[in-house]
Amino acid sequence: MTSSTTRPLLPGAGVYALKVSPYLPQAAGPATVTAWTMLMSLSTGQPVALLDASGLTVERTAATTVLAADHLLPPDARTAAVIGYGRIGRAHARYLRHVRPDMTVRVVSRTRPEELDSGIEAVAGIREAVTGADLVMLCTSAADDVVDPRTLAAGTVTTSISTNAPGAREIPPAAVPDLDVYVDARTTLHVATELVQAAATGWDPATVRGDLTGLVAGSTPRPSGKRPVYFRSVGLGIEDAAVAWAAYQYDNETTEGRP
Image 1 (cartoon, rainbow, N blue to C red):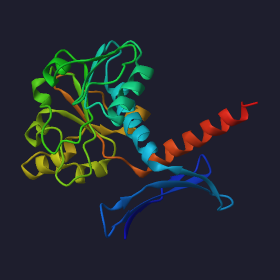
Image 2: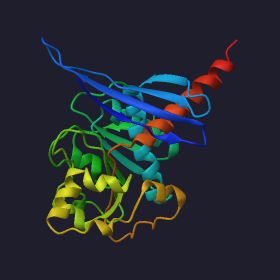
Image 3: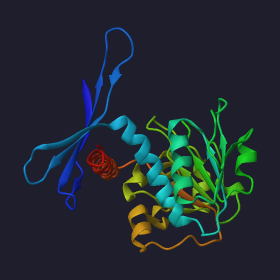
Image 4: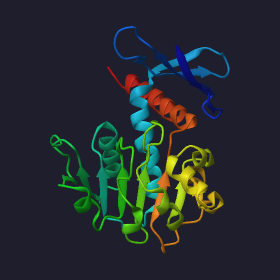
């Protein structure tokens, strides 16, 4: 059995989160993989909540992307493309429509999407989706390039979440030096395949314009407007903790309001 564990701290909320994801090989059939997040009180040391982290991961991933995109996009951005419309892609569209209700979202899916919400439309292919888009959100499980941001207009924001598969990426490493690059955290520079490979061939990671914390705090410079923009996230323990705490608070509020 193997297991990955993170312990991010939320001192303002008075809790820390413990996330455990065991990998349990099975004699017959595929391994069993689960993920659980527990919130623990900093004052009593007692468990506050236990949450299924698989659902939280979907919400955390989409929320992180849209939070960054909202800070990187100009106020008059009108069109977005979501490439890959599975659970995570749908969450991206949902969060974006909540934060930017005036934006139209074009989606590309391998299978025909079910009934689409207002403001979301299915298109035939990637080229049609990204043409003229202000924002391109990559939500695929691809192991190779999906979009080359260099083919998009200056100022267009491309986001990528990729997967945890070895070598997975959604844009070509050769494109990285020609982009205004932002990351969810500086540690992403050592994990994201395309950024690691770009650095190995001469790109200077010090040219990254900022991270998610800086975007939210307003201490990170805005995109230059001269090049396409790229935001890369890999998922952080502190993001899991924040979403778990938000879910716990929401559940408490709705429970208190029930008859």
